[in-house]
Amino acid sequence: MSLHDVLTDQERLAELDPQQLQRLVGLVEHDDSRDPFPVTGWDAVVWAVGNAGQAALLFQVVYGMELVAYSGPETGNRDHHAYVLRSGAIRFEVRGSGRPGQPDRRPPPPPR
Image 1 (spheres, one colour):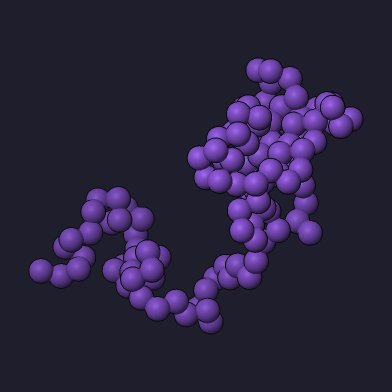
Image 2 (tube, rainbow, N blue to C red; image 1 turned 180 degrees about the vertical axis):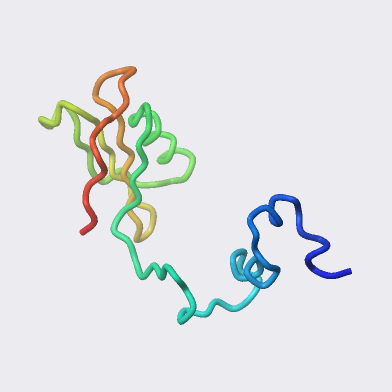
C-alpha cells in the first residue's frame, strides 16, 4: 500500500502529493530556502470580534494572557473597542465595534 492510498478525500482534493503534505504538516525537516512565505516575526495578531470585552476577558482567564492596553469610548476612541493582550513575546489585539450589534468596519492597522 502506498502513501497515496492512505490519503483522505480532503487531502486528495487539495491536490497535494504525499511529500508536499508531509512538509505542510511538519513531518519532515523544514527547509527555509524552499519556503514560499517565510515568516521572520510579527508585531501583533489582530482578531475582529463581536464583543471585544468578553473576548479579552476570556483570553485573560482561560489562556492567562496579560492585558496591557485598552482603547475605546472612555479614551476618546468612539468607533470601536480594542484590547491588547500579551502572551510571552507576542501581542494580540482583540477589536470589536463600539456599538452593540454593529460590526467593526475599520480596517486593521497597517503593518509596522
